[in-house]
Image (cartoon, rainbow, N blue to C red):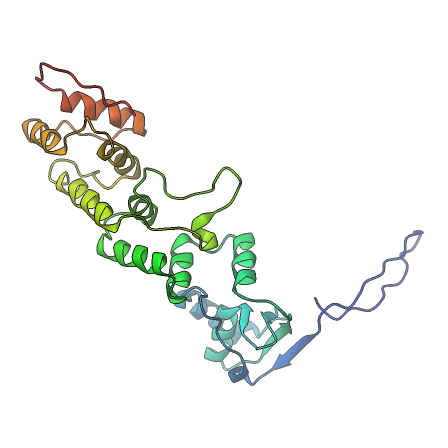
Length: 262
């Protein structure tokens, strides 16, 4: 990406290294020419502060931000904000044709985008399903985001990587199913909190989500048995152990034992 000229032949080598100029690096102190790209993640202000302090001490290093021909920032919004805060110049490279999809690709490769970042980005783009999951997650903030995604998917899985390697949530393809069912399930799980502090553990939520879809499972009956045995629910290592424990609690002093296998 930096300006390059043809490199000289290495000593004792028959190979010629042909380096081609790809994109030019520019420098500017006019930081107002740059624009945020709609749908990018919310900046980490602590990270901006650390970068600004580093720039103030060591100066701006030649680590260019990437922008498209509209001067929208594709990569480097934190560096740009830090340059503004420290009243520094910035290096930049113009890559024609880049858009939000390249923002996602670059950050996926750098492994610094979280699911929350993707959710915020797609919600800012006014994608209905992501606005719904954002609202749900904010309302049910005692549950992790992955668990909220699973509940809103009305499933025990959290819309992770599919069999063909796709990532629906990260790709903006995730669909929120029945939000009323998701909230009903979340409320029921929360009713268990007085009897089990681990009510919001992912494996427990996943187990309960499967049981809610089991026609043999009566939640009211389960809560009755939990109240009879208020210390019976304990942490388990995985969902299978949780299912076995819940089945034992559910069948406590019952004449007709019910199997709650998936």
